[in-house]
Amino acid sequence: MIRTVRILAAAVAIGLAAPFATAPVVARAVPESFADLAERLLPSVVNISTTQTVVAGRERQGPETPQFPPGSPFEEFFREFFDRQQRQGQGPQQRPRRAQSLGSGFIIAYENGEGFIVTNNHVIDGADEVNVILHDNTTLRAEVAGRDPRTDLALLKVRTDKPLIPVKFGNSDALRIGDWVLAIGNPFGLGGTVTAGIVSARGRDIRIGPYDDFIQTDAAINRGNSGGPLFNMAGEVVGVNTAIFSPTGGSIGIGFAIPSAIAQNVVSQLREHGRIRRGWLGVRIQQVTDEIAESVGLPGGARGALVAGVNEGGPADKARLQNGDIILEFNNQEIREMRVLPRVVADTPIGREVPVVIWRNGRRETVRVTVGELPDDAQLAAATPGPQDRGGRPVEVPGTGLRLSTITPELRERFGLPQDARGVLVVEVDPNSPAAERGVRPGDLILEVQQETVSNPAEVRERFDRARQTGRRNVLVLIESQGGQGPRWVAIPVGRG
Image (cartoon, rainbow, N blue to C red; front, side):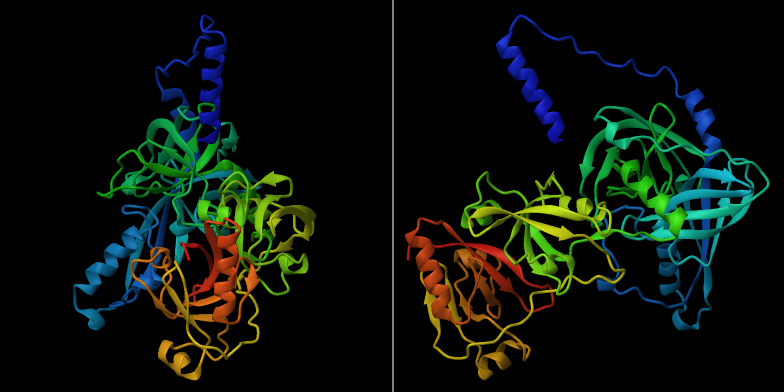
């Protein structure tokens, strides 16, 4: 989207400079037919059938079940159907049943009787048996060669004397909005089905993974298309069809595909190592808002990724990154939005020392970070707890709606605070105040103000007074709420005092 806006702006500027010199718009002709392309590609696309033992009466717990867009193939569509039927039946008296799921995939390699097939991880997740059905209806037993839940990709391996026809990955970075694309897959178990459309958008974040960067297309994608390829007009795979938005469960022209720029790297690692090795920085981050940017004096408005926690002993900790730092560049790549950072770090070679440009204490600084390897069970840690100050009385911070106190035994019990709780306790919040509007609630703990640790209410008030005197409109506050979500930065207006 940014690239398109810049092109339009440049065109307008040229028009103003030379109003009588207009550049002709050259558009590719609409294809007369996709028949030749479809005929060539269909043998490389497979149907995938999986079976899984479903325990009778098993209930899926809401909080444990990922929530995806309505109609998304991420919903375990066919297994969900069977589970629902069982729940409406005899319950615990029913015997376990064999549930079937259907999806799609495509062949990327065939050599010495071994073939490799790409699909979505959610297509084969939890399966007891995976079968690949070729275009000529030959069925092959498949084994999982590797899987990556973070990008929802999986690699299957089959053995057969029948020659398989692989397809090649193309360059998804070369796609332009409006380019023709072709989707082939197994919608609703019907078998090889071809649909055509255009690239509707790029770089979509639909909040289903840490590395979201989807291609949006209006080529019809339905349940069962998951794992199938999205082709460009050269017959190259530029995406892996993965999800849809739909209020009905059917295609409404809003489908999403994992770009080949991501898929190719993941598949290559799965084929070579059976697992994925990713770069790791060891920080928990959040979005920089305009209020946060103003509160720390960041020129140019909201940009970068705000560090809200540093893993003890991790790469960032060893490089002395701190809570409140704003990462502006990583390895010479600009970080315009928070969500860009995880992808950039993940793609950085493990063990490489890279420059990281940060905003700290009102100025740019550059630190050197040696990228680590993302642990399989990486947990984003909060800052290490520090000592508490238990003295003092409740204090009101004028203009904010906050009433604060140190942590006393009575307040610890009242708000259910853990024994190692630290910081300044929020005991009251005016429901009509700026703090309430930004989600601050009684029982929250203030850990830092303007990136300085605070241990009593007087320190918090002094930081707000100082910001007001220097002309700041907002103050950056590190808040920890009860519930295990970890600290977060909040920009609170200073008020009139």
